[in-house]
Length: 86
Image (tube, rainbow, N blue to C red; front, side, top):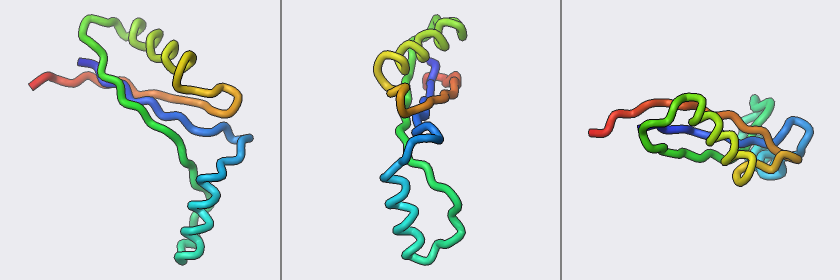
């Protein structure tokens, strides 16, 4: 089986209000050394066997383009790994 982990974050130019709120709260708790904090989304897909690496990349990019990512505000990256069925 192939597992794909997709990570979606705001673009650098977009204000992330949730991250700013958490960063301020951590500052109030005494954690003053945090220069930057990012909050995003993550997804984990398990794909059926038999796909080539190129097919996997194509399908993941299409899924991100059509469903998971708002290109006006977000970027994404992903990691592909193979797992053994036990």
